[in-house]
Image (tube, rainbow, N blue to C red; front, side, top):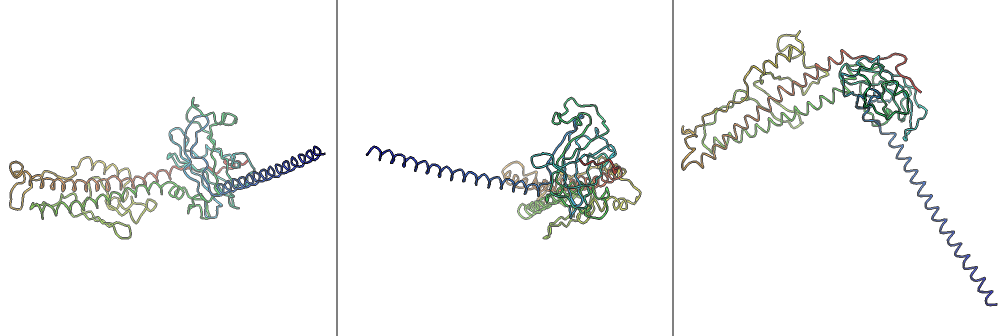
Length: 420
């Protein structure tokens, strides 16, 4: 009898353990399922957030046959996201066509895993080629606005200026069109919040070449030059402070007759104002240099015309101007004259104190004279960089921009953009 009781007791115990295990296992599975669902939901949300914000999905590319490399510079849009512009730049300008009619664009949609999906927009488009600058772009218009979708864009060059490269990429080996035609693929999302808004895209008409090139290309290049110009002015301010310091030391402490500053820098003044702008007054201009107001004007406004008028030749060309300034810089002696005979206020030559028991005092005064001369040289060097090099770069940018704009082309043919 006791054996039978023990049997049923053991059965009951095992059954309870099985129930406990089943419940525990079920809770574990439910927990794993919850974590999986939450993780998947977070992944989808992250993908959606990325899709809504990220505009550039390709940073560089190479053509499939000729292996010419390039970069995606930016994705731009109008304020209402009905217009977009994708700007690219080829690394080797000599090997590409500068005629926009030699390019076609093929476009479809893809998802975040680069799997093809139906296009959510039906844009019209055209191709811009900005002369021989290496820049080209795709202009797109979708009247309903661009949704947040990654566009798979293939750009085909129908003119090959170099023979097929032995180093051509095998990236598109499965797509026969990349073997038959010289083309490249990029991915972009013009509906993303990261797409940079351009003023010229927000107007009613298609953007003019000059406005588009100025806003998409020139603005950044000009900003870099202006940054250098401000740095030049800061260098001159620092040098001015050193000039004052060593002038005071020599006259007040060392009892030295301080000569006037060299003519090439004498009378100049440079100061940074509280609003962050600079006030400057240059009494002279270095040979081959320029002196014009750039703080209140931009390349888009134009500097060259005013300089031609200052020189009394309003019909002058930029090439003639640059040649004139280069010749002037080469033929004219410039810099700071350092051959100075330093004298104390009592008329004693500093050089006469170089040896003997007064050599210590000589070393002290000599260090201060060297400090002043170095400050003069540093100021002149910064002034030369400012007036000749960096202001010259602004003018060169304007002249180059004018050339690019005048030689640009736009392909608006019916077959320039094909959607699939």
